[in-house]
Length: 130
Image 1 (cartoon, one colour):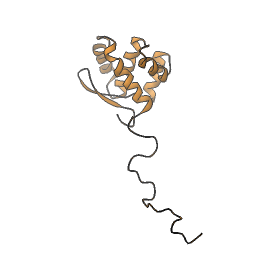
Image 2: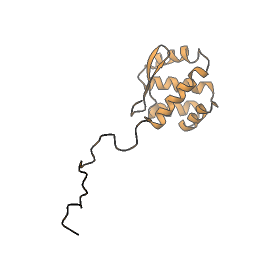
Image 3: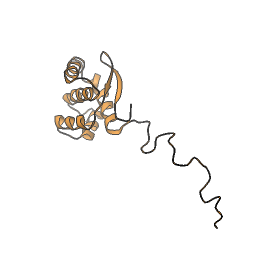
Image 4: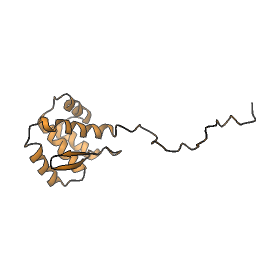
């Protein structure tokens, strides 16, 4: 998973990059008539409609760089042509990556990033002032 919310998964006929950026999330909300976090909850609790799985996968493939035609072809073959449960966790993971970002990164400063001073000494420690 990367900072932009993309995730590469072994799926269907190979490794595919999935990403739901702001625009794709808006289209997903419109297609499913619910907010992204509501949909994530529905996918997580298996209370979703099957088309919510296919919409999530198709838009994430497009956001990941596939053409709309290729994304539709992949979804028809590997989502709509298969039992819904096979892709439920893929859809959930993709949407979670979009909503929450990379799970191994903390908000704010990146690891190893300088904070302005590498000194371990307090700025007032060597001062002559009381």
